[in-house]
Image 1: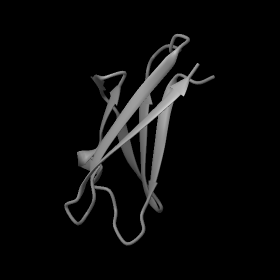
Image 2: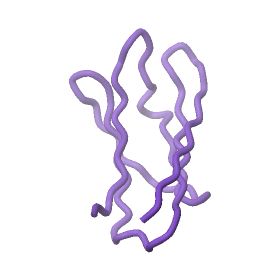
Image 3: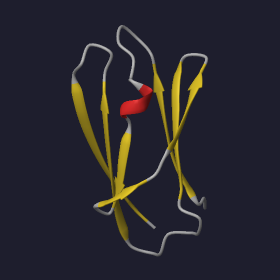
Image 4: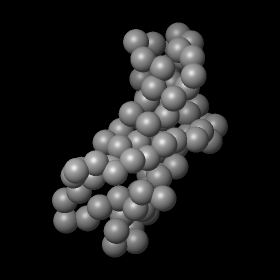
Length: 78
């Protein structure tokens, strides 16, 4: 088990604007850290403790280099 939620974006024709990345966990805004990698960016949220058992949702929003805004939603169960 991990206390972090991590996403990696790999650049292709478009790239993700690093400063645009936002995350919500179970509907609440959370603070993420972003860092550049050799082929894109890494996004990490450190919960600080283990999440409780149950179903959790993550909403990730970002803007691509062409100005297109995207929102992706994921859910997972512990």
